[in-house]
Image (cartoon, rainbow, N blue to C red; front, side, top):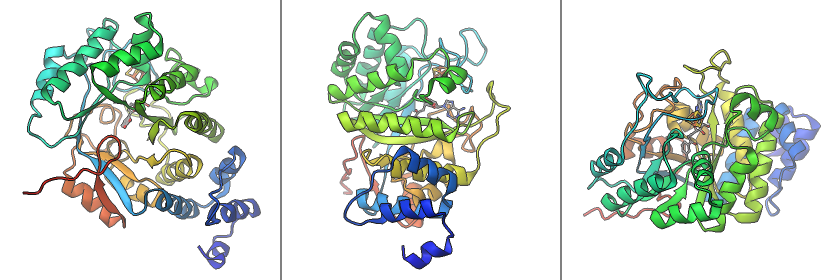
Length: 376
Ligand code: V47
Ligand code: SF4
């Protein structure tokens, strides 16, 4: 970006100073919390996009990743009652669902012969399940789909069942790893700051418990993702505090593969009176995530939550991953009012989306290795 371009954007002196620091070619500048807050409050969103794409290109070049995946959501019955959740039900409610281990195995078996590389399993925290049930579910999926990576259970589910089993986090995770768990998704982080967490999900494991679960996984060599749920009652300070805690853990463990900013969707939950934030606000969050989290290699625009057009736009704000084909196997976002009521994308459509944003699509596995397919 030339000085002239910067000038046309009419930046405040502090934004201009931070911009110059971020644009130094040879010394990547680590944003302080104060600088990140200044950018969120004062920087034009177009500037954030330019800076974030420059950072993304330095990290992953022209590549934008996607994978072939399905989700399995074994139940929406949950012991917790997060106020933003449109998905949970109590046992006995008409639209509560629950899959037995046989049901889960049958869902996996329906995919035999398909080119998927990942099965993502998350659900409500069912009061009756124990650690052995969670292990057996993974074994059954791996038995019928031995080549897939099972990315399973949020830190919320994991913390609950492992603690209930009377084990340390490391002991419990080791059992799941032995059963075939290959990675852990990023859900359940929400907002770490206690004054917000207590209002939106008071019963859930605390920030410290969520972070300790991921840290234990990283010690065992299990890669994990991380998320934020933004755009409800939190302030910018809470978002930066959240990113700060993730960056600090990542400095110590290097176990996070991807960060996923999750936009709060407001239908059919007890926080529905709160509006949803605007598209520029989503793009600002994407760009700040890329710029602040300088030690997390991938920033994911999760299309079932953002919608397809916003996902394409997010690639101009630093995202380098659009998640997967999904094939209509997740309900968390459709139940919360997301545009995609039956989320499913072909690989051709995903590649087209990436190319029209000016990047190179790369099919990846869970660990961001490129998947090379035999086309014969
Ligand atoms: O933790 C629930 C969120 C998360 C709402 O790791 C909501 O690759 C918005 O974490 N509005 C679970 N969000 C999903 C998740 C995830 C998704 C995709 C990929 C990965 C990954 C992880 O869904 C929950 C919560 O933050 N959520 N309700 C809502 N109304
Ligand atoms: Fe349960 Fe997860 Fe919904 Fe919270 S977000 S109520 S833990 S299903």
